[in-house]
Image 1 (cartoon, rainbow, N blue to C red):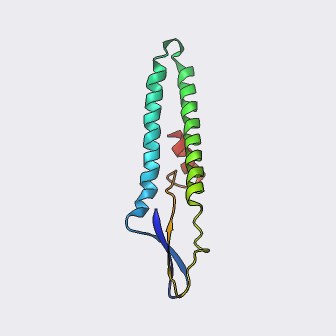
Image 2 (tube, rainbow, N blue to C red):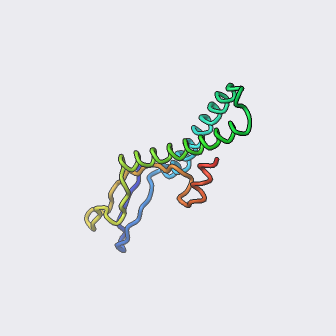
Image 3 (cartoon, rainbow, N blue to C red):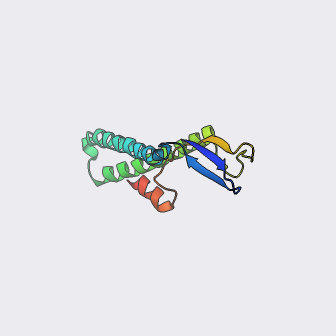
Length: 125
């Protein structure tokens, strides 16, 4: 997501997103969940064909496997995004009274929020 760190006239640093870039906070997490839902449906249909093992055990194993797959996908995605884009350091942005604007690129979010409840909700979904 493209953003800007700017220095105000009073000397404060502000961070804003350019255009509609802030919408990517929602769309990136929604695409992640949507892809995992497709993966879950395909896995359920594929495992349902394994008729000798149908039942609660298969459903529990499928649910646990999907939760682990979600956690691994989110972890790998967050690690790759951090490796590619790094962390956004608003306090360290090179803005001065002569050069008041610094453009930044930030990775989109993996989850709908950063609280443990929101992360757990995404993984359980």
